[in-house]
Image (tube, rainbow, N blue to C red; front, side, top):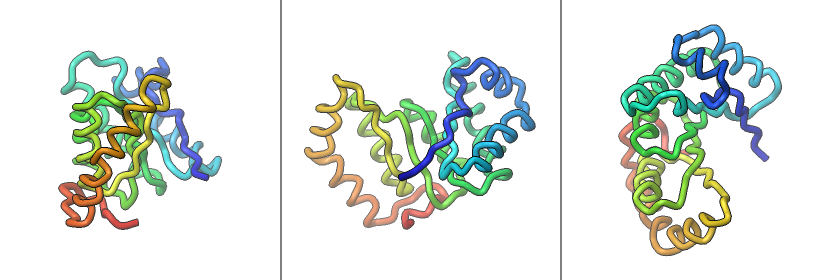
Amino acid sequence: MLIIGENINATRKKVADAIKQRNVEFITDLAEKQVQSGVDFIDVNAGSGYSDGLQKQAAIQWMIETLQTRVDVPLVIDSDEPELIGAALEKYQGERVLINSVTDENESLEATGKLAASCGAWLVGLALPEAISHISQAVMSGLACTVSSMLATRSCSSKVSPTW
């Protein structure tokens, strides 16, 4: 069983404010408390609170850079937006990474699968009733082969190791 700390989420007003203000102390305090509680991963969600994609990307990159200098547990990139996931992976330095909130939208699922394969990330799919069959079908119809193929060639574009 893996325990994922979910407190660094921009849907929480105090967290969203801290992200906008680039409040290192607030964000790292949340992360350190979760690590002290025994989490295996820290979930990082910077998406809400910004309507502009570039602002979201800058926010998640700031969070990734900030957290990996303060905690020794792997991070979870929590977004259903491939562009945001890619921006986060550009800054991620850890050996392990999870991508959370994978949805069944065909373009998003394919793009997220390719990003995951490029760095050996584990995926966490949203188990929404309408999504379950689509995700299962996508994986069974070839996405798994694409991911396996890309992992086999170790085509990581980031510094994340594809081996665990």
